[in-house]
Length: 562
Image (cartoon, rainbow, N blue to C red; front, side):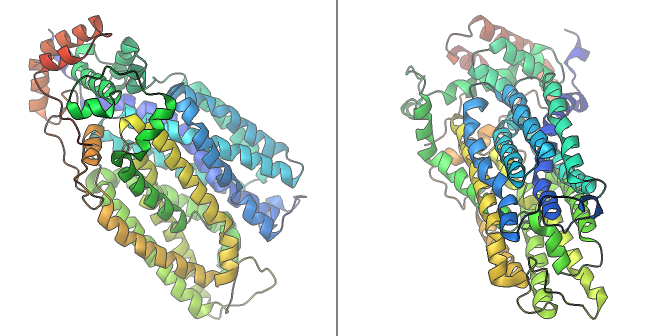
């Protein structure tokens, strides 16, 4: 065998994963556009926006604005639950292609809207679409990446989300909101075409017994390599997929399962098991903190909030600055996550939010008039020292920066990797639905909370929640960076470990197709012939048991405790 053909550079291994992730990230960009959309609509229809929307004929009251700012989040959980019926049955790739149809439809409705209710309808359709796409895009990312690149590529994906937020805020400063909607209408069409050129995940293909297609996909994703380069990883994926179909009694007895596959309703029973409930508790806590401590709850109303703080810079420009800093936070996440890990980054980000909300609380109670709220346009005041008005600008922009450095991102990161394979599709859909439902609650109640507590009172509210969240996540948040999906599943399947046992042990057995040094590459060359034999045997006997493959490989699979 040609020795040079066995050498696969790290760049070549990572490049196709980056390409597939980039194409998928067009949907992430659309998510960012949808996150920023309520801010644009509320500002335009309450007539507190820039000169480009001065001739807008539609208008809404502050109470109706609270609905417009949150209605899409009310329907996103519905979309997330519906995604269960397309993510697993149709595959991750087809599901991502299909969701572009309602996305384009929603943007077109907004562009042609001639009444307030048409604006609401467009927002509802977009909310359903975002809910539909979240589960397939995160599961897709988790299943195509190697453990060493998963965290970095996830952080890379979030750059597109923040870029979408910044883009829609920037476009809002240059043109009317209807023109913005028309430009956004083109993105789903481009995305659907681009997705045709990336592969389906090997894990999903193997679960559908499409072995040859799965191997082609894995070869594509690992650098367009010959099959012997990915032979061992392919066998490992087969074993994991086969084991995920075993019933729990067979897993406990360490024997091959001969029972029929579980029905769709029986798969929901897996949600009640501790290995799913423990990750769900962590993800659920992260979802709550992302919606009730980050900048997301106030974002639809950020323009009137900035005006209430008497900021020296025009409010829509500050909103665009916040979008830019969101992007900077996502870029820093991309560069830092591999070195710091997810846990340290999250602790840093929620600590930053705590300090920003604390400073804004002290500023508000010291300098704002008593009972000051952003929805009261009749009540104005003048700051004697105009220099102090930069304090809320700095605090709110940094608040947004720290939010996207970790708080907003972390639930989605863990959603793609922390759940066991058997319940991953359903559990991730339910978690996404929970996140969106909490997002609706946080945005819909913001108007009532601010009118009750005032602007400084809301800052105090967020300060208390972020402080409690800091303590909670310090105790229970595990480090999953550079841990394989099998290591993570093994950790949560161990019933002897509680939520505060956050150390996930890295398995000593590493995949040969992901070398970390020259020795690993040499080992791969030495065993390449052996792997070819194994891989060929798999395809000759793909409808038979994988037990013979286990014996040929000479190691036992460590079964997780239940």
